[in-house]
Image (cartoon, rainbow, N blue to C red; front, side, top):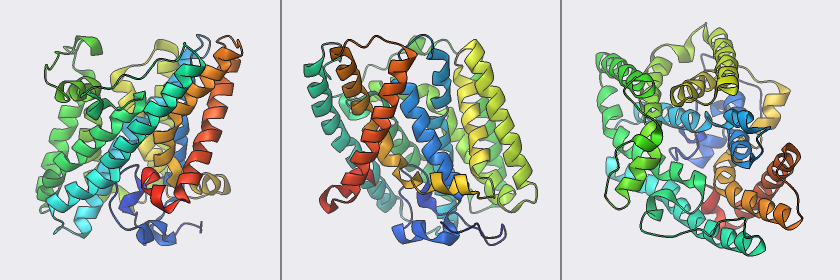
Length: 360
């Protein structure tokens, strides 16, 4: 990874966001289109997701907040890169875009649902403490392991946002208006006093759709934040002299939001706000040695997101078989095993031409 170019010359490849799937691999690999801080942030967010899903012990339960902002971050950054891609190429066809998203996102989702079912069935055979995955028509929205629901959500969010983003980019006033409306809607979704707990949301009694809504309704605000942030990024922040300072402010806000939730419990609105703060930090215009080391594995985040949950269950099954009681030590062992095995899985698939599509 080369050192960062100047702010004025810098641009960001749309394919950097998890699952954004826009832009060529050659563009993504160009030294002039990579942000080391963003690539590093992507892998940090992926590790946060793995930690969140690894925690079982009461002692470490509060620490799960470290991975709960990742979905919002990935959603926001995907909206930013969708807007940048359409700004550079406003003639993109919606049908072709939707087809590309289907291949880049939903097809790997189906593949990992099958892999997850096989691995979880294997883990269930090792230990009865591992649930046997259930498959139904709703699996097309949820997948066979917990984090897979996000991929259909991101797929739908991108193809629905596409025409709105293309329309607003034609005029600055449209962008400002859309951004303002999106901020209001996002705040209402995140902090509206009339929202009850997640389980109280009205049930939609439709196959697939009902499951999709149940899993994603309280994550939709990240799409609106992402659209608003895309306008701010393109119109002002990208080339602002204040960008470094704003990134620092985002980092401080992230620490404050995570600390509050660590003490008081996870809040739906605050975890999305933390994702927005992490986005500001991720778009910092600097690159250090540590960031570059993390950035080197940043492109693996898509595969790590897909691969980690079955390995967590297998690690738990082995721990159960060995009589290892739930504790913070077991959480750490499961996390380390899931990270190592997920990385090995992603590297193996990436080097196998016929299976590379599974890790984008």
